[in-house]
Image (tube, rainbow, N blue to C red; front, side, top):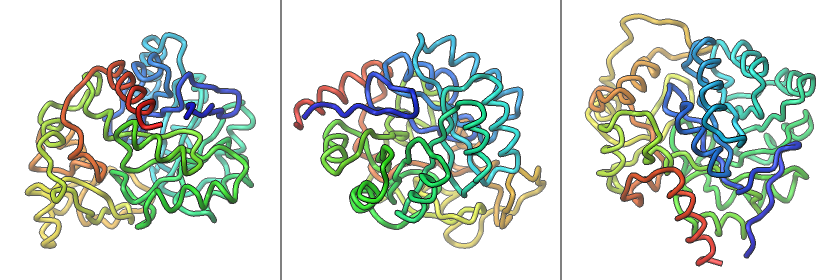
Length: 316
């Protein structure tokens, strides 16, 4: 089975593989640039960055990309959502992916600037609304994904449902870690795949080694769904922080920077994610996809692409 041709507006990556844009400086320029250079779409996770940091990351990624496609992922739930979007546009970003809520304004901003907008959705209703307002494509994200979740249904269920009801490309996301997984999604009608967890275990991902070791050592039963102050459930690896959270004993925030439009303040999600990224993995949240336990090695991004494409060819 031939790889599908993915088009997002006028953008056409060499391979229909998108690296998920993980927030709080997990997906930075080093990773996004390497993915773009390898022929996919590299996404910078803008949420949790200052505007100046985002500008710097976009410029660094562009320098590494070798002419490849660079985008950003920006959570609608972030208080600085509009400012981050406008900063990315002003830096000439190729595309913007957005989820964790729905903005109508972003489609107008995208149209005015010529930047295609991709909505991350988990239902037919949300996909059709995104198409109506001008989305160039949608990411159909199932419950297998890491991080904040919009559904408890499998990606295998929602991809064909959404594909049937929209006329724009549908990109599958959630639990995809191999070429076989890619082939399964293409057979269901996906025009491409988005993968985040697999790319954390790349040499170019800038998180601490202790964060990566949590991924490598995770067993299937270690990956659990937790509550997040964002108001959505999240999928993470069990550790002392998560165990305390499950008992209702998560540490209350000592201070608050107001990074989210709405927050339960049950604990500080920004602090929890920052701790883990920086190596304090017992004192924070380590978001990961359901199938993280299937990944057994840390590889350069170029080798990850080679392996995915070889596995895809073997599966079809």
